[in-house]
Length: 310
Image (cartoon, rainbow, N blue to C red):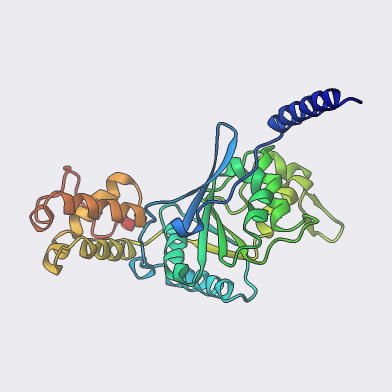
């Protein structure tokens, strides 16, 4: 083969390789790990990107009230993880607005100076978990993969990917990665009445769930630690509202005057969650603090002394 023919052949080969490479799935690149303690995994026009969070939520553990038992369990598990000891993947479930996501953010702030990092992943992107874990496997930091408000409909691809990553893949999970997920559903999948039709009772009277129920339970069971959150009582709700009012600078007299407006706010929202208490405190502080607290509550309905009796 002549020199010119060889050069033409090599040029054509390089052109073909370049065109073939353009058809391959884009690879996930490493971010600037020093840019933040938290990152978001996204796909932008099909390209996977790990973006630093420029303004990380500053909530601290001491700001979260009436969830002391849940706080201690998550704090202990996270401490073990940061210290390189065995720790579990965690599923936080229960009533909405009770501090599940806030608790995870507060744990990040507690241990970020000890090398803890958080990567937020939407459920639609969970199919890329293996690539994400491979990217951080050799890093010295400890990573929490954070899936907020997680729930699946039947047949979603992310369900199988998460299930395999938690326990079931032939590849061992990196010991510097844990998955923390929050959900209002204990088993992460909708539970249908028809699922119970396959259940059977044996000759000894024992109930055996059908395969559909077993499948739905199997994902949540792969989380080593379950932490449950419950609706707040009126007293707990008022304590949380008072804590946030102090955070926004109101004095004790203004907080005492805010009791009835706080109850009206909860009654109108149909919930006494920590989120509702925080929203009430923001509204009251924004409207003028003590003067607003002393104002008459909105609405004409009488306010019961205890909303449990309403």
